[in-house]
Length: 348
Image (cartoon, rainbow, N blue to C red; front, side, top):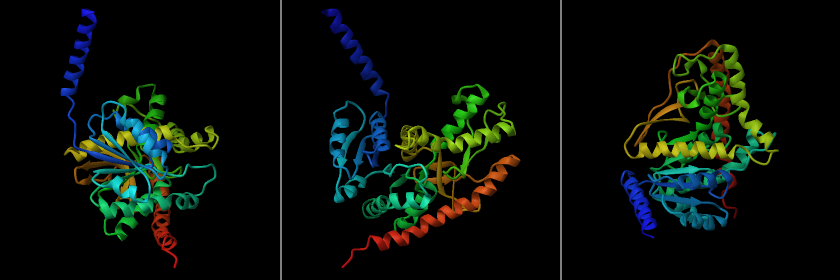
């Protein structure tokens, strides 16, 4: 009996000593679309984050209240609150430093960009309206496809509502850099933890550009033939996952993981640090208004967008080919603002 009590006291002391070294931050994050598979997995990952103080979960589905309650019953991590309904969205984003848009209609085989914009635009419009009304200073992270169009769409809406800050709106593309590292590590037969390589362009099968010529450490090299093969694999990863899942869902686990990585870094930035994240943002350096790549972020937003790289001939060709595609996608998103605003006007 004495031995059991001693062990229990020792374990409690060890836990308490560890907790003393964990700095709890006064950061609040809102996850929009928390009942969907991406949002639910992201919420579970964020619940384990001891640097986060409060987690707000919103979804149109009323099951969100039960999901938030379930997470709230788990020890440790942030306080969890659930919101639903028309007024719930405004309450969910109020006071949050970071709002993560995880809500989306799943990608299906054969879906066009126009179909995906039409499916996902209404939810994005409501979120932008809520942010403009309740929390215009928040960081907005978007994972809703098609990302090349949805980030310009959200930016145009926020501008229309008088709440646009180009340094605080991001499309999260961590999943592209993660896939590129994995494929490069397999080709080189090394651990992906030892590799870094920038991924630039957009977030679609024809605009993702892994810069294998910029791989670090510099002793690793990917020859041009390998780079061509690996680039095709990275670009088709999302489509292949949809196919393997028989069209039921896209890369939900990978997206939740990448959003969680993004949130971890953003907490550091919000608390005064400087971090590098892979994201699709307002960026005029490549002949487009938006572009993706490693971006330095601080407590007030973007400090330095990606701008200069040394390309191989193959990568230079890919960048040149991607620019008109990204420009078309950006225009699609921006022009859809006029349609969605007209469609959602009350009819008398």
